[in-house]
Structures are given as structure tokens and as C-alpha cells.
Amino acid sequence: MNNIFRNVVILFLVVFFSFIFSEFVGESYDKIFGQSGSFVDLRSLSGLPLAFIFFLTLLFTAFGGSKKYWWIGILLLPAAAFEVYFDWSHIYFPIAIGLIGWLLGLGISRLLSRSQDV
Image (cartoon, rainbow, N blue to C red; front, side, top):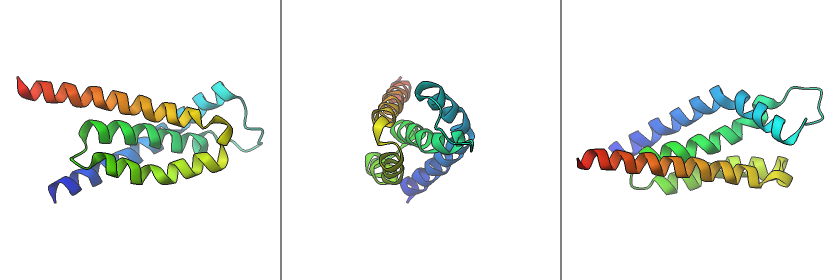
């Protein structure tokens, strides 16, 4: 039960950080790939699933419990569906963001496990 509670707390942190950083990620995405061609400013909307993918893989890999990859896989489905439906031409970008988040989380996880061994 404690493991499930920890993963739910991590999920709330992922959603919180995703909302906070969505505009920054959307602006960065807009600078890399150009304007969306709409008169409505969609930077925060386009940055939300990208920030969600990054923080989900980062935080669950670093601090998740024994079934952290199961949680990552299930929770990535809506963000992946959004990216596939709305931005198929740049699908490599969310994959790269997920891999970067996973590698950073893996590094944090290993640093934490080494500090507990000492």
C-alpha cells in the first residue's frame, strides 16, 4: 500500500510540474519547429504533453517503486496518443524527451542508491 501511495504522490508531482513548465516547453518547441500557423497561442497546450512525458519518465524512474515501468507505460498512453494524433511529423521529439527524462532519472536513482550504500 505504501508503494501505491508513493506512486500516486509522484503522479501528482508530475501533473503539477507539467502545468508549471508547459508554457516554457511549448515556447522551446515553437522555437525549434516554427509557428503552428494559428492565431491562437497554443504554446502551453502543445508543451503540456511534452512536459508530462519528460517529468513522468524522470520522476518515476528516479523515485518510483518496484512497478515504476508499469506506471510509466500506462500513464504515457494518453500523452503518446495526443502526440501521435496531433504531431505525427515530429514524433521523434517526444521520444527523445522521454529518453532524456529516463536517463536523468536513472542517473538520479543510481546516485541515491550509492549514497544509501555508503
